[in-house]
Length: 264
Image (cartoon, rainbow, N blue to C red; front, top):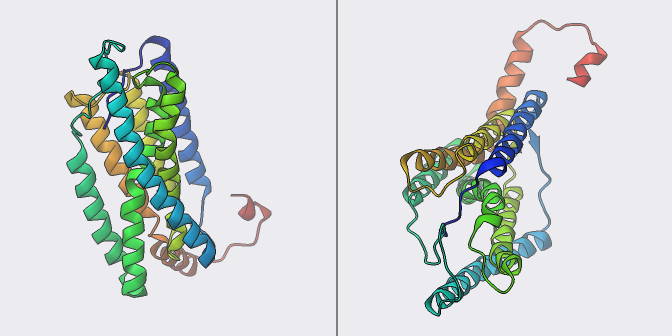
C-alpha cells in the first residue's frame, strides 16, 4: 500500500458531500429494487477474454508498482524529489489482516449458501465473491486517492496514470468475474451495503481521508473493507430472497391489480 497526502479545506468538504450524496442515492435505488437482478452468463470466448485481461492486468500491477516505487526512491536519493506527506517506499498495510480474514469468511459463507447447486458452482461462486469483495472497496478508494499520491517529475499526471490504470483494469476485470456465476444477483441488500460503504468513505473524507495510521482512519478503513465483502456476499442471496418474496406473496391476500404496482 502506498501512502497519500490527506485532503484539506474545501477539497475535504467537497469530497465528503459527493460521497454522502452517492451513498444516499445508492440507498434510494435499493429501496426501488423490489426483486433481485441477475446477469446473462457470458460466452466461452468472453470468459477466456476476461480471464486473459485479468491475468495480464495483475502482472502489469506487479511490474508497474515496483517500477514506480523504484523510480521515486531514485529521485529522493539524488535530491530530485522531496517528500512531506507521502512516502516513496512501500508502507506496511495496517488492514491487510482484515482483508484476508474477510476474504476467508466470505469464501466459506458463500460456499455454504450456494452448496445445494453443486460443488463446482459453490466453489466458483465462493471464489468470485472472495475476489470481488476487496475490489468493491479498492475501485472507489483508488479514485479518491488518485490525485493525492506523490507527484513524480517530470509529469505527475502521467506517472499517476501509469501506476493506477493497471489497478483500475484489474479491479474492473475482477468485478466482471461475477458474471461467471449463474447465482450472482443484485438485490436491495447489495445496494444498502454498498451505500453503507460510501457513507463510511464520507465519514473518512470528513477528517481529510488520511492514511490509516491513526486509530480513527484505521477503524474507518476496516469497516469499509468489511462492508465491501458484505456487498459481495449479498450478491449470492438471490435464491433466498426470491423464496422469501414468493412465500410472502402466497401468504398474503391478493389485492386488485393497480398500474402503480409496476411503478414501484
